[in-house]
Length: 400
Length: 113
Image (cartoon, rainbow over all chains, first blue to last red; front, side):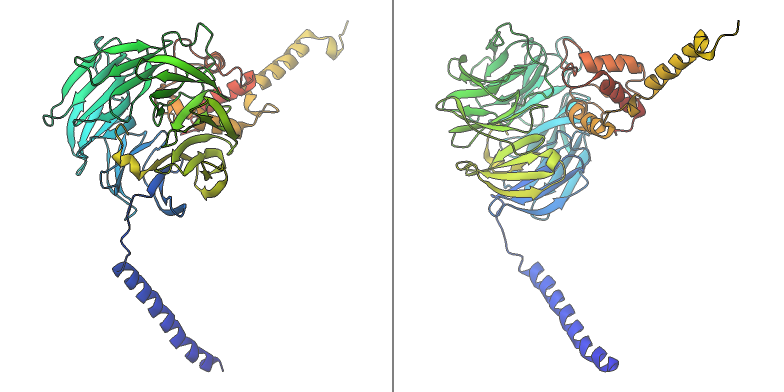
């Protein structure tokens, strides 16, 4: 009996094995080509991994490990939306193939990096460094070094750099944190940049960003009550102080998490800025640089991100109020919805046309997906200690 | 006249010393302190400025070597009161004295890396 059983089992096993082999072979041969316009990545900060996701079916496709220290990591995408460039805190710059789910190349370019940008032609990757400071620029294909730009301010000291963005014309703008300067790095003539230095712009500019038309660059100051504005369409460039004394003499609250200008909201000619040390968003008229309103919110804002149509601004908050997200209506300048996705909401990213938003909830090890009109939770994706979420359409936006 | 043991100053002194000593050395075991939560806070919340591995970011490195010149008490006070004129905030509204002392111990021990 046993022999018989054995005999009959065998052809079955062989059949099963050949089916698996055929599936594998067939899968490899007929690998359905797919677009990348609905892809994205989630930075998993504690495990140093990147989750590759797609936003149509709201699913995790693959995980890429070995990206080093990803606390405070950020990501930009190649023009074809196939490759993600990941800037790690440990100075790592990794080029990840989203379709193959693997690291194509990884270099450790500095001791301690904060973020980066990709030039408008897709050829240059610029990395902003805390240690040794300055900006390093790499070839987007090979990751070979193109230019090393130490950030030595007018006072002679080396500076950490923040708020690095791309602007049209194969150029970047960056802010020097320690020196209080803003530099434009123009690579239009080749590998050696023409540098325009704006000095003495203010004390401790901690982050900066540019409007999606690449025209207005704003840097938030930590050491002073104000914001720096540079109109990049003007010649010569000048740094203009705006919103001076926006705290109106009131003692700022302790800041347990620096606000971010990345992913900020510029809507209908208005800018929604996180106020530092205050539980408010400042609403600024872009044309006049004047404050036109304030929105009282739940805590100190960290990110204030506009839904792509501009009708809403979604806000998350600093520790210890970081379990909450509020939605501000940009017409009425009022909070229209509040939700508690869970402990430590770190980041949020809208789908390309804003029908849904993905929210990372670090201490729940989850990314939650919400409908932005009904606010209904559509999905929850398991992800260990998720922080930044980046979708590929960023490839086609200025200043990302 | 022979004193009873509880009348002897030196014994009270020794007992006081024991209590104080236990307090100073044992902040990490003080009742009501959730050391695991504080380790998490160091990694995640201190880490958002000082780096997840505490090797520095916008804030300076907090590795044991980098903070060797601070004693535990100075660290406790910096944590509680912050450093005016820099982004280092006072944590007094959120942490007790004992919790701040425990965080100083955690930093000194180098267990977060």
